[in-house]
Image (cartoon, rainbow, N blue to C red):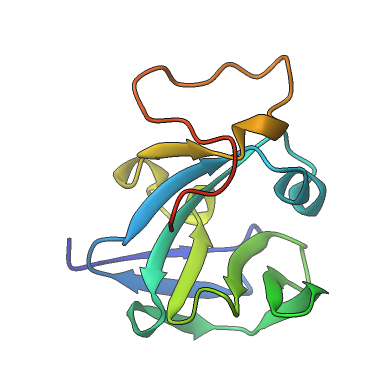
Length: 133
């Protein structure tokens, strides 16, 4: 994969990712639920030099020291995630890619916080907490 683009709901923020992700995850943590209002969140994790903001500006919310969530200030779409304890990596929300099907989750993380009414994918590994990426 050379590159693929994505963006927020209103189109104010557009981004491009290049190459293959370092990891793809489906997260069940309470933070992802609260930041999106959804029951889960899928991520494609790239080296930060493989993510380029093409248009607009990503607004940043620091939920705790060293943890940054990026979103569109106009429509509120959650777009990115970075944390200081994982330098050099930049996560994008898979569903904001123009083609979210190209990077399906290869593992489920934070399943210890999974809502009881969400069914997990039995075909991928599950981790009660984070799983190295």
